[in-house]
Length: 190
Image 1 (cartoon, one colour):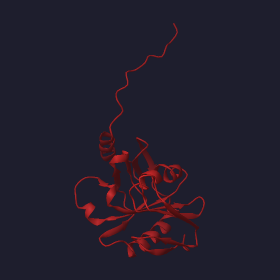
Image 2: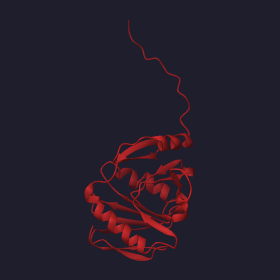
Image 3: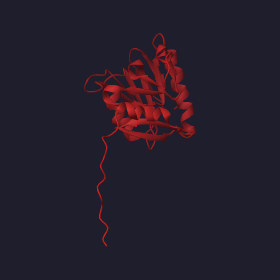
C-alpha cells in the first residue's frame, strides 16, 4: 500500500492578540526572550557577556540626556506595535516612565523615545530589516549597535515610510544623537 499525504484542515492563523497572550504566558528559559517577529513567536538568547559593558555605557549616557520623565533601561520588557502586529523586547530602550505604572507584561510602543538593538548572528537580520521598518514609523530614535561590523548607526525622523535620516560611525568615534536627546555618544569604550 502506498502512503499518501492527507491534507489537514488548517485553522485560521492566530491573531496578533492571541500571539501576544501566548508570549506573555510562555515560560521562556532563563537567558532567553520571546518576541513577535514577522507574525511568529521567536525565542532568542539574551546578549553574550561581552555586550554588557557596551550596553551599560550606552544606557548611562542616554539616561543622562533622556527627555524629562523618561528612563533608559536594559530590562526585558516587551513593547507592542499593534498597527504592525509586532512586539519586540529591545536590548536597550528609553521610554516614558509612566508607561510602566499599569499591570500586564507589555508596553505600548508609543512610550518609546529611543530603542537600541545590539546585533548578534541570530538577530542581525531582524534588527536591520524588520525592526528598522516597524520602529521607523513611530520611535523617534533607533540605534543599531552592529557588533559584527564594529559600527553604530543612529536613525531618526520617523515617517509612514520609515526613517528619513541616518548616521553611521565606527566604534571609537563620537555619534550625534538628535533631539529629544541632543548630544554626542562617546563610543571609545565600545
